Length: 237
Picture 1: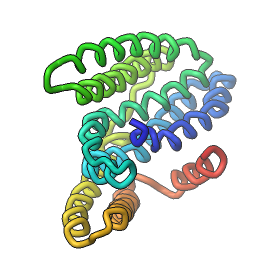
Picture 2: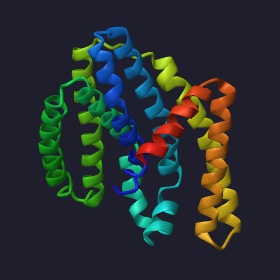
Picture 3: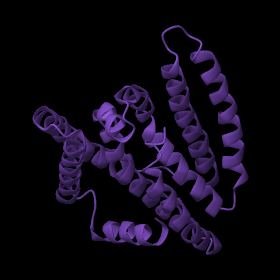
């Protein structure tokens, strides 16, 4: 689970950076600006979180083998990664709700989802053949459930309707291309190099480069987005 939270360094920084921007729009009573900044926040979150999820899905055993020395942990990472994007969206949603002056809403959702998560871990780990995989499945379900609760509250507060083409379809396409390249690179590098760490870095670097290029050429990201991400990284990461 700790690996899955690494992209959260950026997504939580994004959520922190959102607070003054959302609060300012709210103070101006500018609902249009609130919705615009909220939409942009989700788009940037997906732009950052999507490639990380792809790496976790394509390279789970390699990542756990190099970082933890136990490739078998990658099976649990794979299950949790299926819901990884919901974890990142939920964190951004919490930041937005706090910026809107509604911090109790995500807290309430956290209490409810934590209760269900504990119940899920308790029952699923007891299922023969599940064991630790059951705990991973419970955590993945918790990510999805929490994100749905937070998104529902955000919709009630702002009336926001997301532009799925802009915030999801384009990044998903770019991440899909990156995923195909990563799969090919995985077979090439890990089949020829005796150093797993070097192979892992090569595959991730190539995949990240391809993702960035496809984002630029598809118009999914522009100079303004890059500047915002760099600013957030410098100030909060």
